[in-house]
Length: 298
Image (cartoon, rainbow, N blue to C red):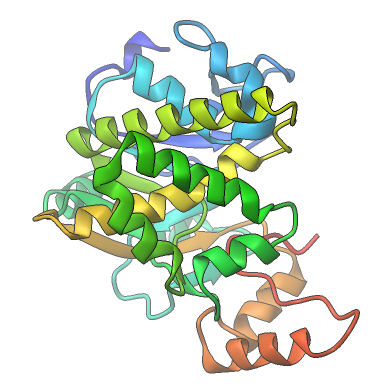
């Protein structure tokens, strides 16, 4: 299977860790953490050549798939989505985030489009990324308050990034101090951007892991993935300072429970109603905050 997908024009890794039901055009199912878990039928495991990172999936999450693709596959454009989160290529859609229980064949054709249409869309840009969400607080504030996140981890990562790649310092400061958040580690990039993105990201994460180990601290589950998610926003900010063409598109989540679908209908992400509800929820002790479009409702 590895040789069959070499040198594709557009290669989009469909990151998964369990059964998947929909494979959008140009997507290749890829199992993250294959060294740790039973194989997922029909998915390319992130082991084999340069697959040593697979064992770090509990902290790197879908980044193990990105690392594997970076080291082993060639394409003009590299992209990543999830087995329940896809790019919506229907440019007539008015909402930035859609939540569905399932996609009928007609909906798949409408939202996911054909491979030819995707290629034509990409020819007009260097990076395609889902719309960011206004969370009502800065990226740094959100990281420090989100469940499972530790603000000192982001602070350490930013220190490392500034030391190793000082040319990104300004972009990092700009991104973490504003309210528009890029979530989910989803993107499609031209090869040159993807190579640079991975070179910087994995060098910083390797140093982050090294420093945590030297301090006698374990890296908490999913932390490297969380940091990679924030770095994607930093890198997009960095590219915007240069003559790169960046486009944003809607995102569609599938297999969503009724609660999430109702929430999206009543309080659409980024709407004034949603931001108002978030502020109200924060003032009510014991009440759970409204999750963003990247979060589950389990």
